[in-house]
Length: 426
Image 1 (spheres, one colour):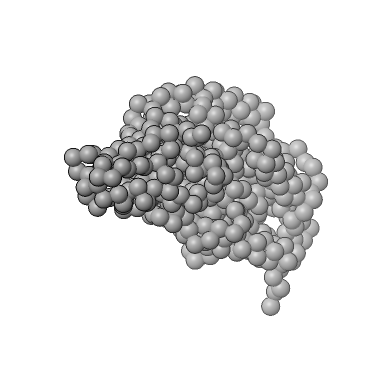
Image 2 (image 1 turned 135 degrees about the horizontal axis):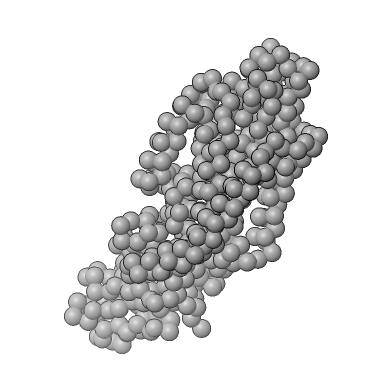
């Protein structure tokens, strides 16, 4: 019986650990190690929104990791990649070599061009992390796309990763010049097709004994399949890629034009979203509704992690997650949503800052109020005051709009209204 390749076993072990952490995170059970903070698209947006040394270092580390080891992210840290890997094990089919299609570069150019232009409206529809979180959180869009990808896996393996995914397209370009590559030793290879037949991306051309390391996701399954030891993963001699200069110029020029067009149209999408924004209450740190509508990736991580279950998924009224006080309120001593948000859409305020951030303003209907004083007792910030026998008064300089008073009122005399922009109270 053939021994399991050590490199393959190591990669599988890391992938299993990451997979467990992701399941715990998406389910809102536990989030001990924030693996989602290493999602390329989310980190890139965080760098753009909240430029800091930590986010820049994380983004740079991911680029360096890819430049050294290739697209290991796609087989180890990507939630959608891990799901597809499981599906390829279930849907056993013999794969054949496939061409590297250039249209994925234009998809990536449009997605990241719009992101630079100020909106993640396209990114959240195709980003592998966003799709995974949306599906895990029960979002209909994520579930539909996930079902479509499952069908695609059945017929084409990880075709989404090699020909559609915008993150994969960028990582693929880096992987193409990575130090560590998969390669076939032509002297030892007997063209048995064991490696190519199990390659989920169709990156191995067994006839020519070559490997396309741009589309290869470094699952290392081929290392474990070869009985002759002809497949190697490691430092490879530098070779000039066989690529037409005219074709390269055409693709680069075309992608650049798409980026510029997307950046320009991004501002239009931002204004359009701003015009459609409904009056909603957002988590502390989300800022203005129109900005948040263009930043939220709808990964639903905050939805699953909210202990009060007041964060709701995007709907027809608002294109991003938002708060709903109909069955609960925002816990004064909790800021879980900011802790788990990897994209910077919800700023990571400290708990003390969150407790001073006004996300709404309570209003009391004097005609309905029965002057019971429950709202005064439940307010965690001392924003309500009441004289004996009088209707309570809301202090606008203290009310943060947490909704505790609205939930406490037995006659529904209190409603928390939205504010034009979140602000920190002195």
